[in-house]
Image 1 (cartoon, one colour):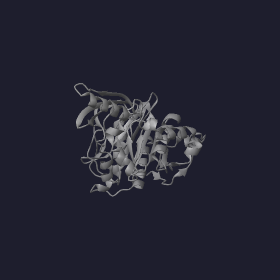
Image 2 (image 1 turned 90 degrees about the vertical axis):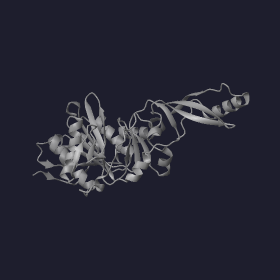
Image 3 (image 1 turned 90 degrees about the horizontal axis):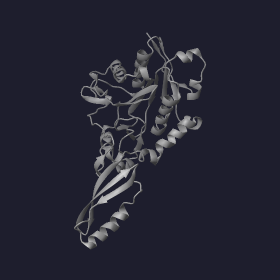
Image 4 (image 1 turned 180 degrees about the vertical axis):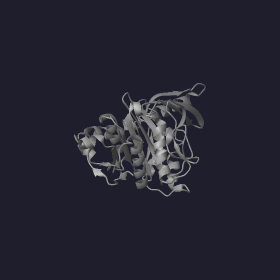
Length: 338
């Protein structure tokens, strides 16, 4: 029987990956973040993915405070009610991978499996996570064609992927005891914009539940971490006869790691969160003296690019008022009001 060592070693990324120890080079690589900052955790993930030699698989586990995480090619106005997020102090984050929008809180645990490109297999990684649930005693676990992990007909884990020439990762959520009411409310788009055309990738809605809501399981974050680590080692390191201590990582990397610092600031910036939004158009009804004037506003990089309207057959007074109102409301180059 393999021996699982549940304690976490406190070690910086630089220390871990510059170790010359033969044992360190053979051991499975597992990192667990002690931060709840989504911008930091995604920046750590990016560092592990881009700056660490992925000669063997890496597992990174983390949780985030309340946040809505949109995919790389998504439109935040299509995916969430931004005013509600602001009122409820839910962070908005654009990640670097594709896929759909997800809700994170401390009742959700995130996993990221990084492998050399030739070892990448979406199905196998989803099955790895599913096997961890089965080992925990969760029944009726299955993996869909979209590589979601479900309990019966309800999704408990959605995932996204990123592939480069030499490496790839599969990362996903695990709803353990998330606030599902807040999840559903946060992922309900606002009616502020009537979007008529968009180049963004839309989310695919699925019925979800949390593991704590299933009749056959009583689980927590620590149990999931333990079992997904075991499943990861069994799959990628079958010859290892022990379970090593995972490495802890967190806030200190903002001080010690320039790459993570830079990535952190980028993820928090308006230019990344909103400025990376694919082109889209919205339709607005402008009321001038009880006359409804359709206006189409085209947006690029989160800013107004073009305003289209037709004032033909309008009287001179309405035309003049409409031009003034439209010019005042929609300045070319202005950022979208969030």
